[in-house]
Amino acid sequence: MKKYIYIFIPALLLYHTTQAQQDINGILQNIEANNKTLRAENKLNATRKLDARTGNYLSNPTVELNQLWADRSVGGNINELAVVQSFDFPGVYTNKNKLADLKTSAADRQYAVIRQQILLTARQTCQQIIYLRKQHSLLEERAQNARNLLELYQKRLEQGDANQIELNKIRLEQLNTDNELRLNQIAQNAAQEQLQNLNGGIAITFTGDQYPETSALPDYPQLEADYLAADPALRELSGQTEIAEREIRLTRALSLPKFDLGYRRNGGSGEKMNGFRIGMSIPLWENKNTVKKAKAQLEYANATAEDKLHSLKSQLKQLYAQAETLHTSLQEYRQILSGMQNTELLAKALQAGQISMLDYLLEIAVFYESRQNYLNIERDYFDTLAQLLQYKL
Image 1 (cartoon, rainbow, N blue to C red):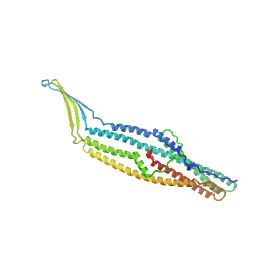
Image 2 (spheres, one colour):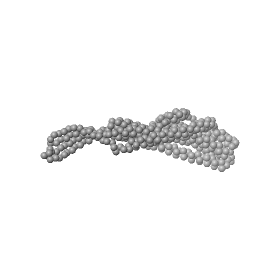
Image 3 (cartoon, rainbow, N blue to C red):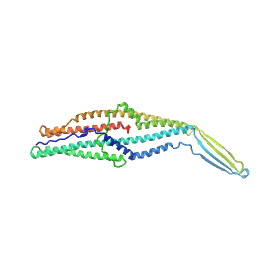
Image 4 (tube, rainbow, N blue to C red):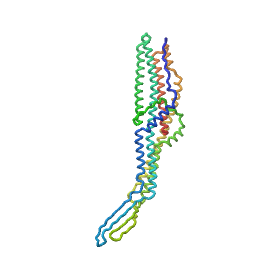
C-alpha cells in the first residue's frame, strides 16, 4: 500500500483581517496610554506651555525709600518715598501674548511628532509579529513535510528501496527547517519584548495573525495633500516660521521707549510734598542687532521648512512607487500560489518513481522559497503602507 505525503497550503493567502485591525488599534491605544516616553513628553509639554506664558506680564513695581540727614538749623532730616511701575509700549504685550499662543501650539505639535513616531514603531512591530507568525506556519508545514518524508524513507531503507545518501539529505532538510523555526521563535520573542517596552514595560498580548484590512492605495495627489496637511513634523516647522515672524514684531516693539510712572512723597520736619514721577528710557544701545538676529532666525526657519517639504515630497513619491510595485507583485504571487498544490503533486510523483529524491527536494525548495518570497513581499508592502498612512495615527 502506497503512502502519500499530503501537505496543504495554509491560510496565509486568505484575508481575515477585521479582527487583526481591531487588535492593532487596541495595542496602539494601550501604548499611547502607558508609554514612558510619551508620559515624560506630556509633562515636558505642560512645562513648555507654562514657559511660553512666563514673562508676559508687567514688570514688578519698585519701591524706594530715601533718608537724608541734615542739621536741624537748616530744616532737619528729609524722607523720600517713591513707588514706580515700568511700562512697555502696548504693542509689546500684544505680541508677547500672540507669541505665547504660537509657542503653546508648537508644544502640542512637538508632542504629536514624538507620539506619531512611537505609534508607527508599535504598528510596524505588530506587523512584524504577524509576518513571523505566518512564516512560522509555513516552516511548521515544511518541517512536518520533512518528518513525513523521513519516516517514509526510513521504511524504504529498511526494505532496500532507498539509500543512506537520500536519507541524509532528508535529515539535513529537517535540520535546516527546525533551525529556522528556532530562529523564528527568537525573533517573535524579541518583537513581543519590544512591544512590551513600548507599553512602558507592562505586559501586553497581541494575538493578531493577519494584516489589517486595507483598501487600495489612494491617488497620489490626494495622499500627498492629506499627508502634508496632517504631518506634525511639517506643521511644527511651519509653526516655527510663524514664531520667528512674531519674534521680529516683538523685537521691534521692544526697541521702542519704555516708561516709568509712579508716586513720590517728600517729607521732613517741615513741609511735606506729594507728587508723581514719570520717566522714559531712550533705546540707544541695549537692543542693538536684535531685529537683525530675529530676521536671521526667520530666514533659517523658512529654509528649514522648505527643505523639509521638498525632502518629504520626495520620500512620499519613493514610498508610493515602492508600494505600487509591491502591490503588483503581491497580486501576481497570490494569483499563482492560491491554486497550486505542488507538495501533493510532487509527493505523488516521488511515490510513483517519476522523479528522484534530489529532484523532489529541489522542486519543493523552489515552492517553499516562492511562498517565503510572498510573505516577504506582503510584509514589505504593509510596512510601506504604514509609513504612507502614518499621518492618520
